[in-house]
Image (cartoon, rainbow, N blue to C red; front, side, top):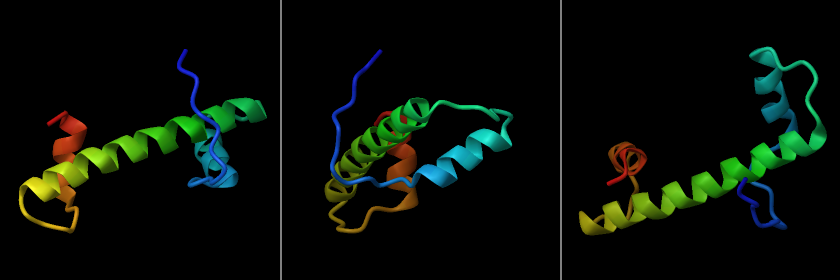
Length: 76
């Protein structure tokens, strides 16, 4: 299990994440489980954004596009 760094700034709110989990059937979820998921999503988003930025810069652009995100998700 990967341990994520504790960030001072939260990028994802707790309630919407919990609502998504409830919508798919997880009616009872421990607070630390939601917190862990939020940390995972934050780290994944940061990594994906960094890779997308590299792709945008390679294309001589400042703006990250949907295609940059799609390529970053695919691992390019």
